[in-house]
Length: 250
Image (cartoon, rainbow, N blue to C red; front, side):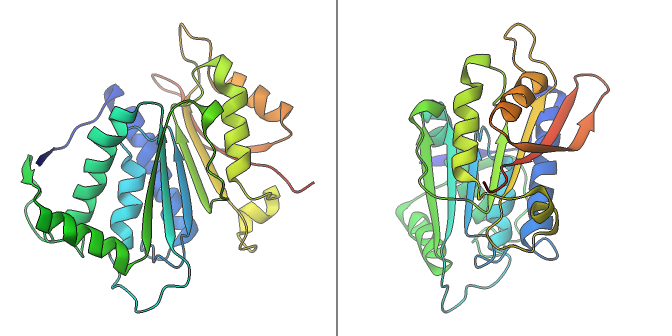
């Protein structure tokens, strides 16, 4: 078995730009000096993970610090995409490569040029050991939002390119709300409460031909009594927005 790796962008680089912004926001929220010890980020959910660029960033950052003898709470990374093939053929290989080239991986310091990585049972065992040493659990979910049951609250929730379908907005909001700790906008801003969730959604302003977009999503958020803050906006070319959202305690 081998994984091919290289460097590319899609949609003229805009989607990747949004995802890197999301990853940077994660570093600001849950770590210092862009290092993310396992004890600080316990649960992260990624809805519509695609190539999982923010998750790879976070995953690699966890390995920047040495493994601790005792970790009280595991780090759980849940990656969700409609297509199972995306998870098995894109997401998992990208996470594996993120570990391989990290500070704790056997590829540390190697020149990162496009190529192929041969994966054998010994390398898989090293990967599993690295996860066990840092108490990292990876979970993968495929299918529509209606069938998705994550069953845990998350410290961080990321979602990108998931608001294009009008018929799925209600189900998407249900999943987002179920994974977020009830958090007031003020507490989300200060982060003083440990049980808060940073929930970021990146999307185009309008998806031509399918009817979805930011306005329709905001309407659904207001219907579910969510609050929202625009954290990032691109107005030139294809309009794009990154929203922080949440639901206040009742």
